[in-house]
Image 1 (cartoon, helix red, strand yellow):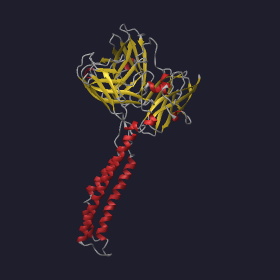
Image 2 (spheres, one colour):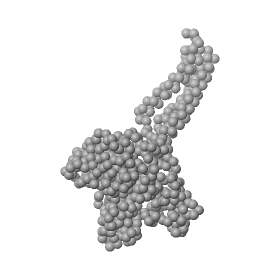
Image 3 (cartoon, rainbow, N blue to C red):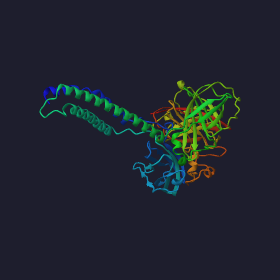
Image 4 (cartoon, helix red, strand yellow):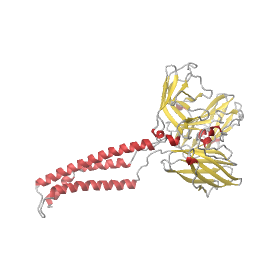
Length: 527
């Protein structure tokens, strides 16, 4: 090729540059699939209670992909544990009977009562982490239920993406150059110079090759997106769609849609609903944007996927709606939607309100200040202490840190209240909501898992754990640790939890005194 030919070739090699850049962009887009978030931002599991004679605090940080590794932390709260082993099993079915070899947890060098370990969770669904302890009081065993599901797709490693991008650019440029050279010089005798006509033909062929490659990459991207979408709908967890509407007779109608994730696992998961605290659904209404009205309701089931709720007396406004249900396998779903309620007088609904229904007002967010004290309707107060620290530091916390949220109830005279009564079998219920609604959690003194799931794994609070292949009989067993049935309880309640994200949260603590459910509201900043 003479100097003139080389100049002409270099000049026209710039023609497909835009196409090459577009192809490179498409490749980058393929290497960075979007992140998806399942549940309502709080997938980790927290448990605090008795394992036989040992009091422990368990944190299970669930994997973001399945198969994946769950990070397990166990802290002995009474200082009497010397060895812990952990085993993953299914909650129900054949997988609940055949335990794999146990993994021994590692004690911390700085704190011998703090143990860490890892477990592979190979499939989505309802799992249990069976914990076997040895120590000063002998051996004990208990189990913590875990909902395992893929939460997002993983990004390609940066180094791998850059390598593939470079290889793609090299292949694209090479193909363009090869086709151009073939059109320009394939029929030229050695030593001869390509004619201007062949050079023009080479430019046209190079441009056509670039366009063809762009079309191939574009169509390939469409195919990739369709395959990724199909895999996403089947593999990434998403709660069932949920719809709320107001009927002409002033009933609140609630409809659960079909979830592709559950449908793919119907046989394995046993997707029928079971009661949790005696109710098939726990419905929470939070008036936005001030979060100044809060309702905890229990709709009546009218069909397989249909529920109805008594409405009347609730404050008008736009509400964020959260609905908790538990599957027959112990798997929980939290569904979300929005609802606008008009002003409806009390007592007009044809459905009698459930005796466990409760609602309260709260300070508007725009004027709220973080405080470790909250007032009750009867003149009493509740004090919050985070992580067992001093009361002066209770209005803030740290994200990702497992801790006990401690509440102390005093009466109107400032004396410790000894008249707390069980509310749906529990000493209290705590609802944690991030102000932007990206986090919602309904937790109890025993932990963040549904109590129905805890009963399914046979953790009765006496250190025993029994897996079951059937669910009906398990619901009649002894209540799990933290489920209270005494006439009166002490003034202190604690909840194991870890705030998953930094930001501002509102906490709604529900307790029962003198036969009435009361709500204490706290605002907490998490760094």
